[in-house]
Structure formats: C-alpha cells, structure tokens
Image (cartoon, rainbow, N blue to C red; front, side):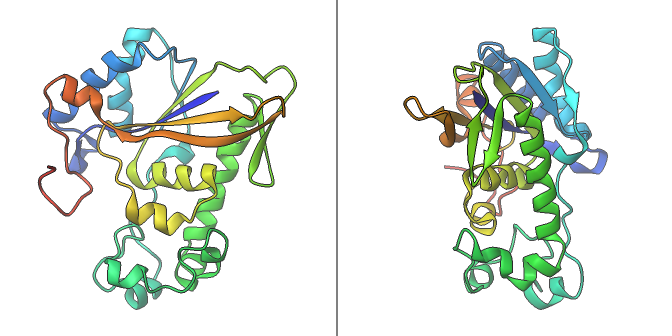
Length: 243
C-alpha cells in the first residue's frame, strides 16, 4: 500500500481558499495525480484543501471522503504555556530554534511526550487523536498498528491501494511523525511541506513476514511545479524566496 500526503496549494488564509497561484498549483498537481493509480481520496474539511483536491477529483471522476480530523491543527497553544515557552510565537511548530532545541528530550522519539509544553498545552491529546483516527482508517485497508509497526491482515499482503490525503503543513507533519514513530517536535521544526507538495509513504512488507514498516520516498516533492514552470511557494517559511 502507498500513502500520499498532500499539502493544499498556495493559500489565501483570510477566506480559507487559494490564491491564483494556488489554483495553478492545484491544476498542475492534478495532472500528476491522475497518473498515480489512486484508489481512495481523503480530504480535510477546510476550503483550501477542498479546492486543491477539486481538479484531481474532477479528472478522476471520484468522490473524496471528508474527514474532520484532517483539518489543520490549532495555531495557538493554551496559556500559560504559550507565554512560558513561546513568547515569540504561540504556534507549536514555529518556535525559534534556540527555544525548542533546548527542551529536554525533544529529540527522543518517546520521551518528548513528557515535555510539559506538549503534554499540558493540549498538543499531545490532539496528536494522539489524529494518530488513533489514522490507524482506525488504514485498518480498514488491511494494516493494523501493533507496537509501532503495521500488521498486514490476511488478503492484503499484496495491496496495491494508493491512499491520498489532502491536508495541511502542521497536520501533514503530525501524520509523518505518527506513521514513522519519530519525534513530533523534531518533524514539525525540520520538515517543510511546500504548498501542493506530495510526500510518498510506502507501507513496505519485509520478505514474507506480514508486517509493514513506513518507508518515506520523496518528502515535500514539488516536481510537478517545476515541470509546469511554476515557482514553489514559500508559504509556511520565514524566508520569502526558495533557491
């Protein structure tokens, strides 16, 4: 089985929609996705994700399934933790590096969960909810999470399903952290998913053992934009130009 995590196109946040550039990105993205043998499409309920998916759904003649838990995470941490840990920004995935890198055990894939900032500010609860909903969904596709890996149900060993998730930057990185078992704060702070980018996850079965591990192949890929002569958007970065 293959999973494609797609961030919405260049956003116009005031109306939860896409800019003209974002609309061009969505069109170029659709030209790529129609060649991907997609079997299932899942969507965030937010407008910018829905509009990004629209050209692909139209070309494929498919109806996507909207899932509430795929919407972007809240931008702001609960007080007083925002003031204590993030005086420069309340956004949990946009903390200055001199702050988040000094949090004890932030790089540990298990112990980061004990950091007060994430544990008490509502991040951990929300992250666990996203992971539980994701696991419930892909269990229906034959992959059941057990001890950090995914047991493959009988009859799904050679699954050729391709699941597409149209979602967001913070949410997409949360999915990557959950699927791989890596530290959520580190994934948040170090991986940029550009607008309309495609991240591919192979659920790989090792030899004849019916257990799959997530293998990332192409994180935040924007080759469809380069092929169409469309610049990559910096939305979500502090820099204003990608080189």
